[in-house]
Image (cartoon, rainbow, N blue to C red):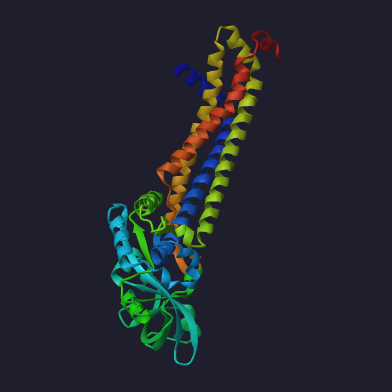
Length: 414
């Protein structure tokens, strides 16, 4: 086998221009794929991080049917204290979970005593919310920075602050209707203004969870949802499966599930952008396979055509068809291997250069975000293996043809 490898390498060196061009095409394909994977992966991770770490968490637990009617923020579908205890017991048993935060979601009328508008509010426990959504405080653009709402104070969205010309320190009144239909109003102080974002969270404000209960006249410690943060986002599917298994055993008197668990992807329209990035990544991978397949197959077909008499000679000398087959397959293998190595090296160098360049971009209302491309060993291994395997497959048909040639006919070829 070692001798066949040496002969295959020597054959590639005999046709240096063709070998160089083929290797260059494979290298370009590998570089394009790895650079796209690193840049798109960095953007996707940053986008997902902004959404999960400042708003949604990685997943949320609700009472069954809450999400389907979430636009009306139904208070009648809040989780009772006994239900909350069961959820928290389940979350405590899963090591992959880092933190969780209970919330009360409600709709209210917001008034600056001159104008009135509607507002969506999240009643939160500041300490637990900080552990679950650590980027929330970075969205505060006015008022007390890096501080979640204290009792008697609220954070309001930029949209409402501008529309009603309300600033931090101003006194406002919130009026809300509880689940029994009674109306209650309480004065609050604006503690800060949140940066506006796209999507359903653009009109969301935040208040202390005890204030939310007081506004809604809730005596029990019930909540609308429990937001969960994972230690590693990559464990999302596994953790959801564990929670569903644990909480799925809890049913109502009618035998129906009591809880429902949703990942951030099901709760945010931004998940469509993530899916588009994944789709573009798939197209890039298909392009890489096509480039390698066409390049290697073309060069191997030409190699067989130009070396027909040579193939006939070594066949007449007693070389087995299997060895001729191996010879051409190994040539394809070496082409793929060389292109994968060169492409990987150039990609790593390019990624390091991009990291040092610190390219900035905007995402929604956020500007100055730094693109920091990274490439994982799994991506490098995938690209390299695909290139080598496709190179071998592309060389099989020409190699098979060469191994089946009749020595006499090959020697007569002009």
